[in-house]
Amino acid sequence: MKTTSVQWLVAISSLCISAHATIMVVATNETYTDRMAAFGPRLPEKGVFGYLAEPAEDPTGCHMVEAPCSDWVALVRRGSCSFITKVRNMQLSGAIAVAVGDTEPQSGWITMYAPGDTSDIKIPSMFLAQNEYHALLYLSKLVDSPMMVLLQLDQWMTWPLLDVLMILFVSPSIIMVFVYISWRLRQKHRHHLEIAPLDVVSQLETRRFSREKIRHNETEECAICLEDYMEGEILRTLPCRHNFHAFCVDAWLTAHKKLCPICKRDITLGFDATNEVTPLLIA
Ligand SMILES: [Zn+2]
Ligand SMILES: [Zn+2]
Image (cartoon, rainbow, N blue to C red):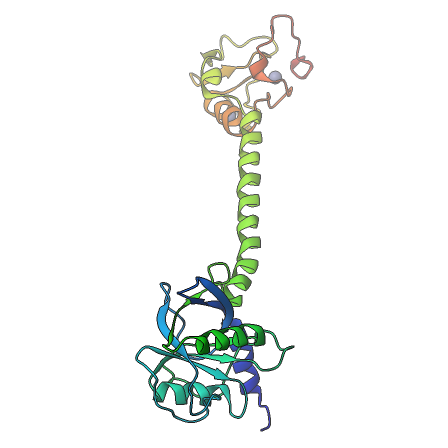
């Protein structure tokens, strides 16, 4: 049959949802690794108990057979017909699950997939590599009564490839978010170091502007808003003796920089300004 793009898509998506599982022989506690088919339901988390037996009439499972017992897990051989045909026939024969075993030594575990509609498959099925298949087949024939097994998803391999891919894509995004948040926190911390604390600013000297009491080297304009001082406006005097509107310089120091807008001195250092002569104000 010619492979169409749809079949390729089915094959790829089938690989993405494949998962490892195990068959545990309850009597011996021995486990045998297998791989879930891409079609049919997945095994429930608590697993499925059943009795493993090969269909005596047709070991390949390509035809309907009589169920050897209730809760029968069919152990069939690969080949002669498609995987889906085997699972469909065993489902019709009363099996609660199907394990398809490989007869080729080199194949390893493969994911059984089937193109087309597989919605009629209501039982889980899994693929066994040759070694596991032969061991289970041998054990199942060793005892007369059907051998009780527990089918379960492998604890460490239950993540399908799709989940792993999701994590691979999502993890860098999470790391990026962490890097961004820490960068923002560092920026905030740096900004915090660059501004003056409100309680320090509020303790700086203030006075009301009066044209009559204007000092010799004092300007009548606020260097921040470039407006002339109005009579009675509250000015704040920085330790460097520069004056500004109180509301202008308070906003500047507490939100922008802790430096005097004119002479760039740090107002938090609290230097003695009595001897300071500010060149800008020398007329
Ligand atoms: Zn101002
Ligand atoms: Zn200054």
